Length: 266
View 1 (cartoon, rainbow, N blue to C red):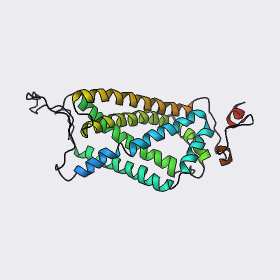
View 2: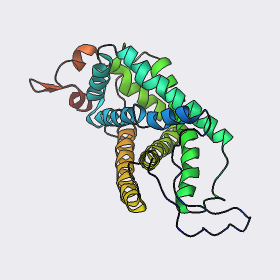
View 3: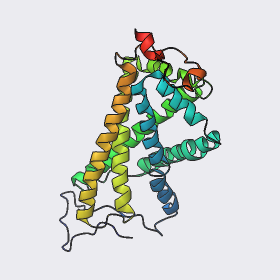
View 4: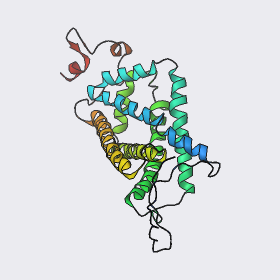
């Protein structure tokens, strides 16, 4: 499998006596029994977890349109066929596996900054820490929003208010902002690592160019995510109703000159 190649000359030795090497280590078969698990771990970060992250950020962006639009998005997602099977098969179980196995790799591994003293490897260390932080955030977020308090699948109209109440806590708000940046960083750099390890971007030039693409994508996702958070805490949609009736969600927001949200603020 193609991956970063070492330079022709022997690289210099680190003052500690370790030989300095460059490049991204590929996923090689035959290096222990963990090869398949690492392969699945790498792949699951892109599909389905990465795909779900994109969908989740775009869905949350509906919050900028107000609580009716946000509730309608929640209602639509929970009305999909076999939604509970899809939820566990493609969201909860993959996230649990990716997070737990990622922590396992992190605990068993050693910092490679001494061996690889280049910026890319400092980024790899950051990737480990943002991964742990992101996993903690996702676990508590799923517990709070999906399994604790009012059931959003049964009460989609309560989704906006539930998030708004949670973010009214300054500590949780700060935690969510930092977590949004950590998740977007972890995903963007994870995509770059995936392409390098799987031989999709062979050669230093291809990896460097793709790195700029990943940076741009990560910044865009972070901007969308932070804008969604602002929708819940900003002045435009303060004091959202605790639960918007489902009948309101399934009808157009503007009908016969009537707008529920604009009326609430008039």
